[in-house]
Image 1 (cartoon, rainbow, N blue to C red):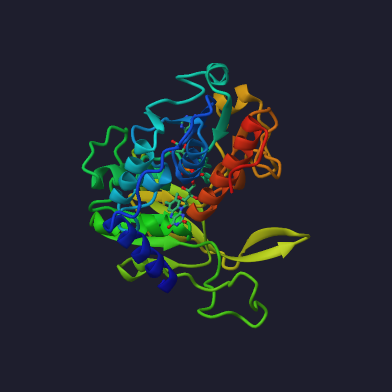
Image 2 (cartoon, rainbow, N blue to C red):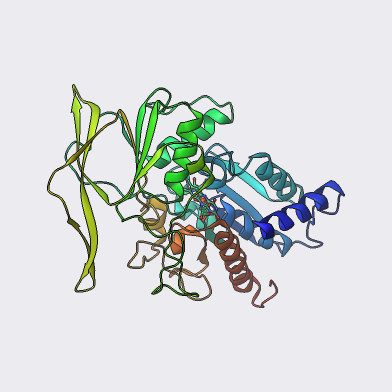
Length: 364
Ligand SMILES: Cc1cc2nc3c(=O)[nH]c(=O)nc-3n(C[C@H](O)[C@H](O)[C@H](O)COP(=O)(O)OP(=O)(O)OC[C@H]3O[C@@H](n4cnc5c(N)ncnc54)[C@H](O)[C@@H]3O)c2cc1C
């Protein structure tokens, strides 16, 4: 937290004092680059490539720039004027932004290749993991991201055009999944004044401090409490959802069993520890159990990119995809991750892309 605050006060002061100014390139190379996706990976790649003198166009299928920064992460974690301030700077440096373009559908990959000398894919990893349990089709069960996008639009004062509209107001909510996305749902449903909310974790409750067998520098297997957890709701550990129950097609309750995680022959399984099922009342369920890599789209098929075993776009150590002149960065290549990684990847992909276009390594 201390490092975050130091960094934040440095950059805020830099903007206040006018130290951060647009840095357009002194010369243009005459080369054109298309960046597909306007999340942190796409924005970082675009800035570097533009500063290297290439003409950069960022294509975004959504109506606003920012990727998950705009419509995934809630305002209570990151206010959206921060993205707008950065986009103003990028536009002033000469980057073109085209929103409402689903590349692969609105513009074919062939057209993109024809108009641009290189392509950077920064399309994210938004394919959600689903639950294969009876009753999944009942009304009132949604992917967390579908809810978060709608809620971010509501908070921004936009009209939600998606159908069905997902709101937690006055609802009994169950969030399935204990990660960052689940915690962001929790903060939102509390702000929307749900009537009650429970977050279900499949794993047993971890300790508050590192166990003896989990020393530094291993990843600390400890209980993660986000600020949203201090705001309300309850957490249930070691519960696996077995089915959803409803009435006239509407969700009414969630059935779950108590389980214990075991590893047998290298495979993790969840074994019921107690026969009886638990029944929890609910009229809204948000599924937040992870992501499965980049959405397979016409764009990726047409470009003939390859995928790794995790469903992510395959790249070499220079962030280059199998087809020449195509690079990829961010969640699209590493799976759901963090903003800092997306920015670092975007800059690294830009470096390789610039070297491909100019024949020399010029970017850091
Ligand atoms: C709910 C939630 C909370 C998070 N909280 C944090 C946090 O607190 N801290 C943190 O560090 N990280 C957080 N993350 C992770 C972080 O947001 C991502 O790691 C990061 O945004 C990935 O950046 P990206 O540029 O690779 O992809 P994204 O941000 O996903 O952007 C990809 C963009 O590509 C666009 N796109 C896809 N296909 C096409 C196409 N064919 N044509 C045009 N556009 C296309 C998409 O519309 C999207 O805008 C969170 C993620 C989620 C889901």
